[in-house]
Every structure is written in structure tokens, then in C-alpha cells.
Length: 358
Image (tube, rainbow, N blue to C red; front, side, top):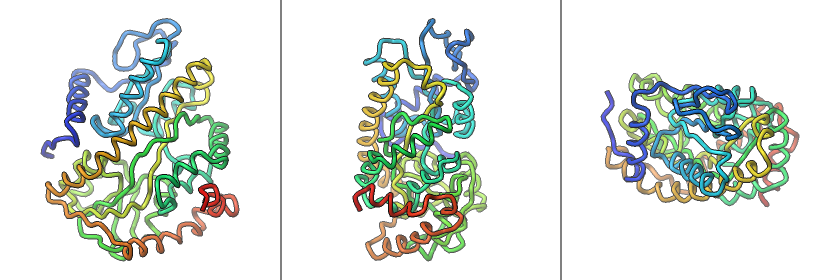
């Protein structure tokens, strides 16, 4: 059994405790349409006539920066809206997997989640996958320039045609680093190592070009797989790695920052078009405001989280410029890999670089 560990911040612990109390004695909720007339998710009284309840499900645990920022989003909607639209939050995959939620969105349910370009590529917008390419962005400013570009708008429109609406796109999910059971101090050390990645072509190929053996697996299965030696490591932003307690069974962390993961919040096209223009504007405005708050939390938590890893016996390796050059050189093969590029628009890499002003 895993030992209990304190959360990243005192505020995070408070949220986590509250979440545990709220969940005690109730089963995982099932999303319901706001107009269904039955009980809403979580066993609460049904919403008043004409009121819209937007249910956001996500994998992150209570207390992580993403969760705290979502609570801010909910608060902002309550403060700035007229009461006709509210947000309900369901952390820790209470509403199902990302794929489950996307299916529900496309079916018209009033649910939302976070997702990224790699997932959108698998949904039929292949060019979007490049945003998850290894070492595409040198800085976060590069990421925000791309988000604000005509190229990003065009890809978002293509996604909307597939039934998915991007509400907010200015959220930092985090730089993705690698936690392993044996040391990695240069890219060649990854050779043959089984590294857990999400189940999509982009992230699988992203680690394959670095020499690893990418192993798609649900995040909830990773702790046991590490413990039993079925895999050698995983990658994710630091708060996700720490709050998943993976440091109990993997003691080596390399701050390789292979992806600057800017994330987006989405809902279904049918749900979006059911909202009034005022409700749509409210969700976008407050979602972006909460994104700024999230990004501040992410920045503030980084060094604290590194110190927490060290306190629990994790060896943290910060690569120098020479080591990072080795990672970036290996990563270039991603942008010409036929499995990745076969459905890309010709010249995509150059077009994206140009959209960032490179």
C-alpha cells in the first residue's frame, strides 16, 4: 500500500481534503443533460429550469495546479455570470477517460475536458499533432505566439467541424519531464527503456526517436507497472508525477523538458451552439482569466516540487546545454518520421515555425 504524502501546497491539501469529504458515500457520477429532469451529476438537486450546468471532467487530482485553477474558473463564472450557467468539477477521472468524455461531447452532452494537439491528430485534424512534437518550442512565448496565429485558428476550425469546440487555449499544463527507475543523464541512456506514454501516435513516436521503447498505458496503471518492473519510467509535468506518488517506485528524474505542454479546454459543438452568445462569451473570458491564474500556479510550484522530490530520495538531474543539444538533435527525426508526417500538410514544420516568427 502506498504511503500518504502531503500535497504540493497547503492550499492544495485543503482542496484535496474537501474533495475526499465530498466523494465519501457517493458513487462516481454519470453526466446528465441539463434538460433531463433527473438528478444532476453528484446526486445534487436538478438545475433550475433554463439553467445550464457545464460538467468538466479531468484526470488530475485535487490540489494540483490545474485543479486549483479550474476551481478559480468555476468561481469566476459564478461571479461574472447571471446564474444561468454554472460549472461542476469532477477530478480524478470521475466522469471517465478522455476518450469517454469526447464521445459524450460529440453525442451532445454538456461535458468538457482538457486535451491537446496529439489527441486532436487522432480525432482527424492531423496537423494539430505537431504542437506535441519534441522540442518544438524553445520558450513558452513561442507556444503563445502559435496559439494566437492564423494557423492555430485554422486548425481549431477544422476541429470544430469534427464536433469539438476549443473554449480556452492559454493554459500551461507543464513542461514534460521523465521519471525513471534507473538514471538517465543523456539521450543515449534511454535506449531500450520502456517509458509509459499516452496512447497516441505523436507521443509514441516522440519517444521512439529518442531511442526509448514507448509503452502506451493508462496513467492509473503506471504505479503498479513501475513497481513490478513492467516499465522503466514515465513522463509528465512535475505536479502530475509528484501527486501520482510515482517517486515512491522510481527514483531518478531528468528535467529534459521534451514538450512544453500548453493545453486546451474543450466541449462539444452541439452543447456550444445550445448556449446563448452571452454564455459563450462568459466561458471564453473566464476560461482565459483562469488560464492566467493557472500559469502563475504552475510557475510557483516548480521549484517547490523539485525540492519535494529531493526530500523523498529522488535524484534530480538538470542537463547542461551539451546534453540538451543531444536530446534536440535526436528529436529532429520526429519531424520527418513517415508514420507521423504521412497525413501532414507538406511543409507543416516550416509553416509552424514561421507562425512563431522563427
